[in-house]
Figure 1 (cartoon, rainbow, N blue to C red):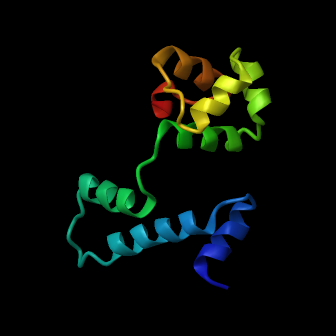
Figure 2: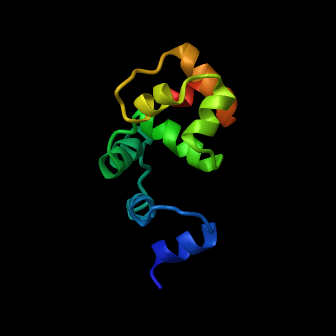
Length: 115
């Protein structure tokens, strides 16, 4: 069994194997730097290259999945319309600070991680 599948099994959640493989790739890059320190900026640049840019929509979906909520449930908890949440998650509606604070409260996270 490869490392990615082993990690996925250990996490016991629906974790995308591609994401796990990308994290392993970053680990391997960090491990094989011949004892040279890799700056945080270099590590983040490498990770961004592997994962692509993480949008607010991606973050909201990830936190919603973590909390095991449907869009409708999250919208109710946050006091917003489900249609607005759907548009935010599809990247069709921008998320402002006020909306991020409402969602973060319902998602048990820092609002800055949604911006």
